[in-house]
Length: 188
Image (cartoon, rainbow, N blue to C red; front, side, top):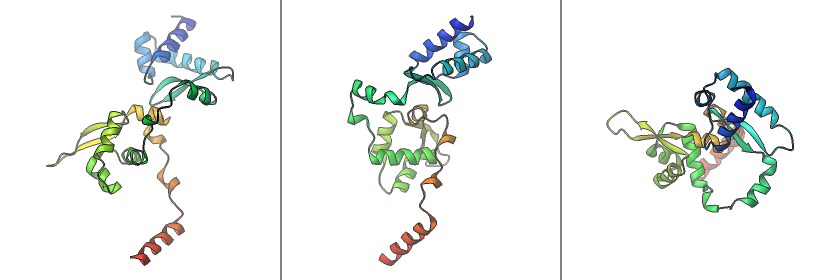
């Protein structure tokens, strides 16, 4: 393939892909060396940088995918049905964060961290594709262990779990934590 047809073939694959596509997969599908794919991906990305373009090429979840640019979000919101049922509740977001940071993790461990039974929320997150079983614990109980999926990375705009924000960024200053601990002790 020459560059122009190769670039067009890559764009066509990325346009119809429902998941990010890796360089390895593009190389296999198009029967072209990976270095040629990388050159074309850079060219596609550069060509989409202009303000007049509505999409951009992003590296997400270990692959590449075309996304609409953030500046066009208001138009897309009007275009698509805004379904409140697709939004996650606070309990679901809390559970998802626990799984993301503690994976692989069992349902019972999630419930222990949250302080409430989390089975229904875990099922919901699994059905929506944010989490999936990763295997079983070793030992007599052999509980099912869960972790996040590629879909989770994609929705969160992360290339890998290493891109999760560090939890320390959300922690209160030590003085505030000590004051809260002292207040709670005084109330007990």
